[in-house]
Image (cartoon, rainbow, N blue to C red; front, side):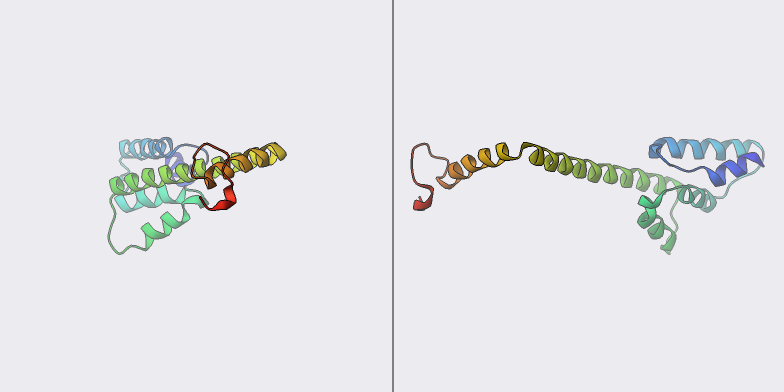
Length: 135
């Protein structure tokens, strides 16, 4: 009974998807040794129920499909989804860091970009050409 409760209540939280799936699998395997076999669709539901809000779109997609997914397919899709979430998180962190750096540099950032825009406007050529001349 304790293993069934663990299977139902285990949450992903801050674990990686691989760690979370391995924990679920070890509980399911332990249940199999007690002669309680967990059906494939139940395995999937137990895994989906332990996911956080960032996986809601994934859960809705999987549970609303008319086709039947295997646990292997769901596992692969979850690992891919986690990788995409991490990729987006890195981009957001990079943007936040850039915004913080620009704010922190204040006048220095503005002065350096002014010189860069003049260089850009004269086509990257060296010399004292007027950037407003259109050359």
